[in-house]
Length: 475
Ligand SMILES: *Cc1c(COP(=O)(O)O)cnc(C)c1O
Image (cartoon, rainbow, N blue to C red; front, side, top):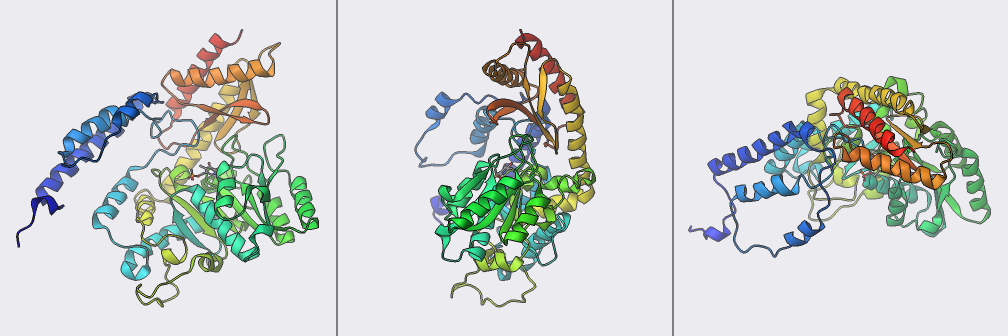
């Protein structure tokens, strides 16, 4: 049968090999040059972006002509998030095995939404989830879900809590979180049908941790008003200052009050692998559910969050659904089925990138990397604290610390402006990228060490550059 050229989307094996080689070669060159790229890229690109708008082309062009502007003009116009000097926001880096896994998953394109369609592949995903469960000391009948990120994991957790405790009476339900919580919690609550007027931001203490006394007061007040407290979302490491809420005490409150305890561990959960930090994260395995972000603390490329739910049946109950056209449902119940534990049916294969990364590196390598980040942070915090005019507002509980700049006679407005200038000018020097935040009414500079590519050299650069900038800023 004659095929119309324009309808044929297949490439020959030789063509595919050439194209894949071209892509791989560009990607490897890119990775190899990361430590020479400016830490913050060049993101002032509004005019460029306007000039890039175009209609869909009627005819295709060769790959090479597209790779050239992509790698030369567009990729560099971004924060250098995979670079070793990225100490801004919450880094991760993007380990290479995960990229290989995505390539395999996308070229083999098997269907991992339901167990029957690719049982062995779904088993790999189940293994990867089970390894995370075990690392976090959750019980064996806990179940999990890979999501696109931490936000979606928290969304699914709130849905589970809502189903469990509110049924159809959603409007009565009240959710508690700290005034330092990540904004995704308010958003997830809203998506799960819990409106902002039913989310209580509980005051944090002078170390930015949720005040348990205020939490119990708020719960009591809501009960008295005829509402139904149903969930507390605590933080195992806030994005602002790295604060870890008193997880164990909050678990006690939730047990006593019979409400769901979800922990947002998108930044901090993987520090539970670090023996030194287990006491700081005490109570973490007691949670009803836990958000983890493999694309942060496991250094995967963006696109992978994870949720673990203590009562695996609750996760399943919130998401279970079937249709007449799907493969006959009943399969041995000891097999995990992604579409019965999450909102998606057709989906990518997130399990493979986690599985391949853990298999290739081994758990010990992840523990060593997370321990290294912790040690680098302690060193960085000690040296930054010793710089003239630096006041530490948040010592590193995990791998993030926050501070401001001061001098005799400085007002709060002076300090805010100087601290912001310190972050901006340190970043401008091109070796490290740092960002700030506003917490408890003042601007804080912050440093977060969580890229697997960050080592001692970048910490030395951070301290040197901050010292030089401070000399130019302080009167
Ligand atoms: C990053 C982060 C989130 C959101 O996770 P995404 O993966 O970006 O969706 C939530 N909470 C904390 C503490 C985070 O650091």
